[in-house]
Length: 258
Image 1 (tube, rainbow, N blue to C red):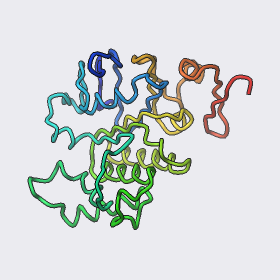
Image 2 (cartoon, one colour):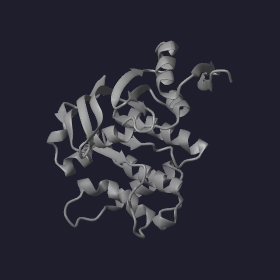
Image 3 (cartoon, rainbow, N blue to C red):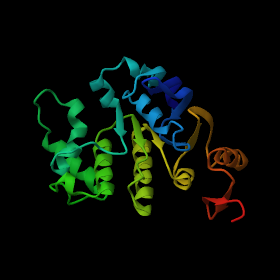
């Protein structure tokens, strides 16, 4: 059942339009991956939904238009993970995770001990147990991404928006990250919209795939249940001459002739 709907989203930068009339919905407890070539609008769409970019159209979560919410209200229901965190100062890892609670704290109010315990637990879940007092700036790029994931998962946000979270992670952690997201959305009844660079990861980890081409929605499929021929057609639209194969309950993607 959809809990989020985007209707005719159009956005861009200054005088350059990037996405045009994108419409889609997200079901409760599901992960939807966005696939598209470089420049197709994946990041722009994510930023428009989370309110970073001005846009036309409407994003509705649980019947409420996100455009009507203040920045503080939006951060209480929506978690966003960019490709890079933007944090440039020396700060303990635990304090980065505790930032996830800022929207629920009053002015000058400090995180509670319960919040600190939750933050430590979130770090353990993403594989950073024991890193709470480490300097965030000393982490690898992959570890920084996992720390920001912990910051997002520490609160029960209904909508998670992730921009290529796998880009700095190794193979095992890419799949663990999507597994953590799946556990989170199914436990909370929320949903996740994830821009992905790796089509194999998207095919095997997402409940639904949204394909972008030239800034518009070219189609969407549920890779585990829909006609593989339609999935392959959409993949070819982006990646050229590829073939979709099912091997031991996993999708693989091959170049034609390989």
